[in-house]
Length: 277
Image (cartoon, rainbow, N blue to C red):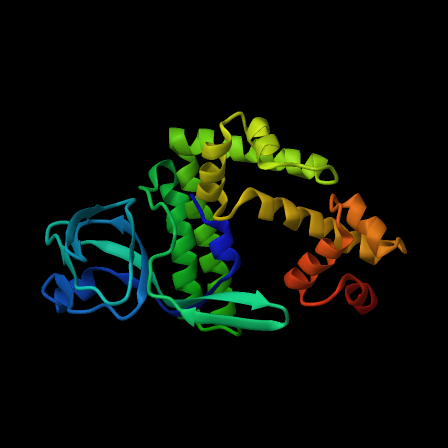
């Protein structure tokens, strides 16, 4: 499942969108070899057959298969001559950025995207359309194409995340997490503990924390506090209520803790936020 906390801070830079097909294989004797990959690659096979050897592992490729590669690994793709492999791929770099107060920090990352890449299955047409559109946008080089390709890339990631929902374990786990989130959205103004949220999810407290992190990338109390802060922003914008009262309405018993949390989240105090909008 998608790590939402990760992707909130995800900043990609697309280097190229490629379409590997017969002309490339004929020029390269039906193989692509890299002693050390230099970029991230997210690929989708739309026809043909082949074998991917990457980071010491071998994998068969056929229509509907998704794959990702990371920098710094040996890689070899061999295409069948009878059924030449054809695939689209995003080539990119990325950073994970963090906001602290009014400063931003982050380093370029070499690890894989936290995605559960499955066979596209019944979504093969939709997945192929996403990759093909990105390739067409990149090839057209119209005004703002870099921006539009980046948006298409994010839409592709969203679609790939939805594919993971079809596994039985993933589906039941996501439903449990969603029940807890619905409880947060309904009762954010009331005291809520991890045990309360686990009860809403109908799982044990210990399992709930692990399940929540699997499906959201974060912890439940931080997610709850983000919902509370979003409501606080609305009240700051739309009402003249005192800061202490707004804190209480949003589930914070301690207004000083609320102010510290708000400062950390937005880079400004509640009072400064109110005067800035």
